[in-house]
Image (cartoon, rainbow, N blue to C red; front, side, top):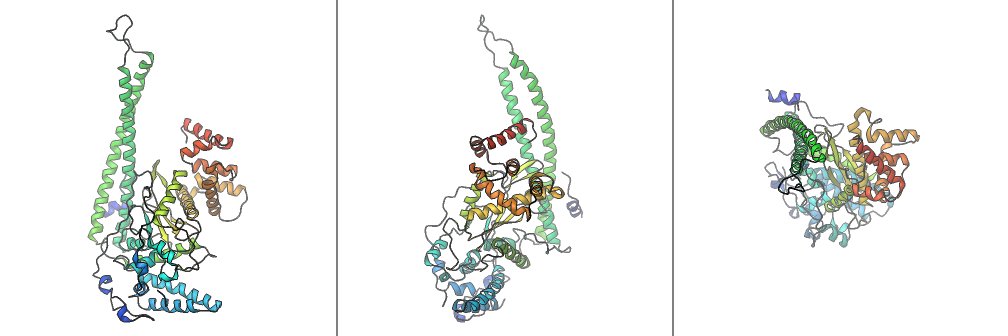
Length: 547
């Protein structure tokens, strides 16, 4: 019918299956047997989770957004059977309720079956998600990825469109479809998303060592970044010294004696003092560099030891089913937040709800293109400060197959690695506006990063402190973060085009703490006295070395 100092904890550690069931409407012979593939002896596929590259300064250029030919899986007459096969009772319930929902004539009955289907489908999804560390058949894979339970529930044009989505992560960016995300979490490549309810058991030695490893890796990457910055600083002094020394060797010939050279000029004599200052700075920088090298070597040694201990425990081999189950509950909460209370919570795509154009679907390529656009305006959107050094760290982006309109930030960074860990944002795949969803997620990320950085003083200092003080002074009611997100969207879409929509105080706060890229600043200063004044403040702060 349907188709520095060593961490104390690290220091202490260094011291010492059945046959698949059939479901209504199918025959046992039609259900492929995937038991051997997904059993305990199944081989795990390698998971590609891009490392944080602190040297990267932008997103890659998108060469293709869609494939030229559609994936044939969506035209497979057995797609629906393959999607449900091997999942037992959860699959039977999904099939039975879906039949009733589609055939119901009474709107009240249809509403009841719709709600029942939502509950049953999430139970069924949990069963499929546990299989992701193995090789999933395309129907199960695309069901997790796109929410396509049965291809004929959407139009032929939409099947063609979704069939052309690029399957593999060719761009090597931290943007994950749901099947990829569960695979990475289940195989241990990526940690579970942070929750308030779940705690790591004290007797779970593997998890404890992994947490220490995360701390050590963060410390090593932070030390490496500081090391590079200090090397660059010394190189700059050396280049200046070379230039000054060369300048001192330049002499004009004497007027009466062309074979003789003139004495040092007054500017050249002043250069001697500048040379002394440069050499002092070089000695100081080299001394600091030596200290940073010691810290990096220690951190690198810690990482090596802890990686060895993780391998000894076998932590990188076994599939962690409990981790996948925990992450599924987190994804359910993410989905609800991206949709909102009044949104459409139906978990699969059907022709009655699917309305997205090719550029509005949150495919990996579309998302990366939009993130690049955001970064071209808000140059520090994905940057985090560590020891006064600004690091560009693109967050994990989880693409949720939902009809939501709001992107969210689930966590700003890993609490065990504040230096170089990625944050996590969730984006609905079928929003009204993909750009708006990503702007909201970026605003949420910016707010949470600034709030965590300010810690107990988040209502007094920095971005959140200044905005909160303005919020209180205006006697506004509601969630201050929601007001901030709305203002951020205006900042990015209106103020960046010189359309003044924000209040003067908010514009000043954003210009200071969420600066536009330099080309946009240069453009805005010529468009209005308001922006010219803000630009001049930047110049004054730079001259006073207080920016």
